[in-house]
Image 1 (tube, rainbow, N blue to C red):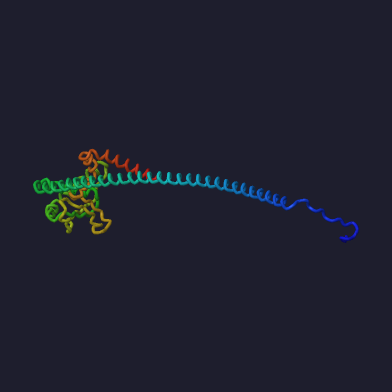
Image 2 (image 1 turned 90 degrees about the vertical axis):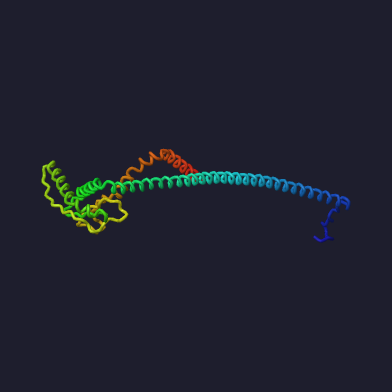
Amino acid sequence: FSESGPGFSPAPRSNMNEADAKKQIENMKRFIEQEAKEKAEEILDQTNQELEAWKNEFKHNKRTYWKNYYLAEKKRREVAGKIAESKLKYSEDERVMKERQNIMNKLKQQAKESLASAITSKPSQYKTLLEDLIVEGLLKIMEAKVTVRATKKDQAVVKGLLKSAQKRFTDEMKKACTTYKTTFQMDTIVEMDSTPLKDSCIGGVWVMSAAYTGRPDAIIVRNSLDARLDSCVEHLTPTIRSLMFPEDENRAKEIADSRAAALAAMDEH
């Protein structure tokens, strides 16, 4: 349609004047500002809530961390204390054990000195003992050819005892064979070994199978007085300790309990 043509009608003019327009714009501004303010307050409120939740979680985590830390530190110090106490007790026990071992060594040394003195003061009895030790060695070895080793100072005496010791051995074996209704037919040769025992040896003899002499697997009956004394000390040490140190048994239990407690504390840690 043309503006001048038939059917054209002009747009209606607005009755809103400039004052009304400004008022409407002001209303829109206030509405937008109110919306923005409410939205800002909502965001701020949400932020404050999230901040408070974070602070509470942070405080809880820190409390938990420090609580666990101090508990662990307390446990560590308790364990360290128990270990230190155990070490102190062990150190003291070690000192006592060394002193007692020194006492045992002194007793053994006194026994050696007594044996050496008895050898000098009772030569006839020592001679009888030497023969008994040789016979005992022969009975243990049961070999056809045997050598006997003695200390340098005893070699002459021992050499003079070989025949009588051999005869006693043969008599003992014949007697045993008669008991079991059999015959003893072994001819035993007993000779003196040219190598003496160590000078530090108190006395006594070694009885050795001649067939194995000088070999690592040699059959040797160590019947020296030193060896017999060592055997006696080893066998009687528990009895001697219980007589001299009766508190050892209780102390050993205390040590075991203390160490067990320290180990248990370490395992828990």
